[in-house]
Amino acid sequence: MLEFAKVFEGALASETMLVRGFNTDPRELERIAEFLKELRPDKAYISIPVRPPAEPYAKPPTEAEAVGAYAIFARALSSARLELLSMLEPPQLEARGDPARAGMQRFCRGGTPLGRV
Image (tube, rainbow, N blue to C red; front, side, top):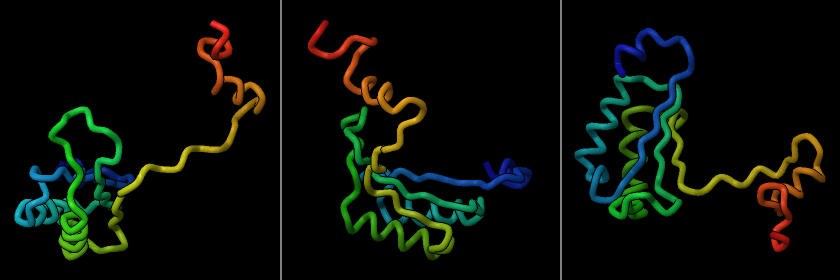
């Protein structure tokens, strides 16, 4: 990754998913933050599992762990390059193409209106 970052000319972003008991220990967070400092991403995202995970062990961090992670990363990087992703993005509310068709697709499966299968 470090070699790639040296030659990559685009905007480099990183994302660190915090999983309670896996990478939320302050010592582990310091190691990750030091790596990111060397990587020098344009944007570093700290994410938290917000949807039901595929693996039962993937639990979100406590609030204190998430705040602590942000503080550790902000010391290594800068808060201007850091973002905490802690909620679902709002649904896209724009329709593309024919709005009536887009609306019907939400209520149909395979082109058949629900309830008329």
